[in-house]
Length: 240
Ligand SMILES: *Cc1c(COP(=O)(O)O)cnc(C)c1O
Image 1 (tube, rainbow, N blue to C red):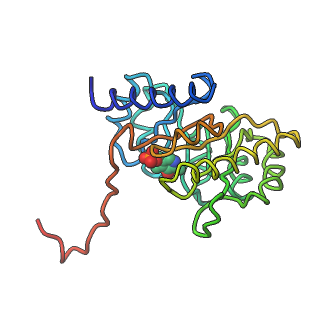
Image 2 (tube, rainbow, N blue to C red; image 1 turned 30 degrees about the horizontal axis):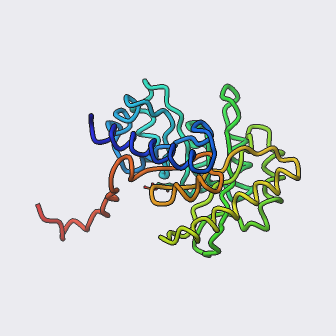
Image 3 (cartoon, protein in one colour; image 1 turned 45 degrees about the vertical axis):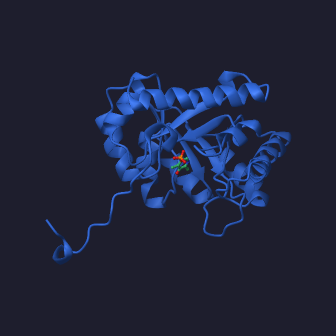
């Protein structure tokens, strides 16, 4: 077995154990493999081990990978910060976007979604940690944004996504995920019919599953530690 194959199995085992511990079925938690910074060969390996849903955070990197892997029946999810000038490429090449936090971005995605593709599946990113630097709509503004997004023709609003502040305190992890789960329930009481809670990463998936996550987004536990490409130094400081 390759490293990726065995790591993928270990992640599936963690998901199964966490689901069982919380009285949830195995199928109620989907695994999104986050392949950002990893090469197409790594995605191919994960696919051969049965994984079909992949998450990417950087548009340029993702487009190259998607093109390279177009022979495989993969489902691509965009999970990174999204600028207006990249919305067309995302609308054309992805099945899902998890990181919408502004009506303007949603409107541009809807307008650019090709007619021959199914509606783009969407989650609103919610900022539960209150960190100003983090993306995401404030919980108290989520309903107004949801109403605007739900009215757009080429999008299907599926639920909420969150990236809580990292902490090893499991109780605090759960408290943050619970805010997202309660917000989803309150939107559903207002008839939004949302079925997706995208939350939980390599280090906090158990807490997320305990609080109702339906998609966990797992990168390093499958593919290993990420090394971000270093900025190219100026030519005169480069050594051979
Ligand atoms: C990178 C990333 C992940 C995966 O994080 P790991 O800790 O490597 O599992 C999940 N969600 C988002 C939004 C990410 O950017």
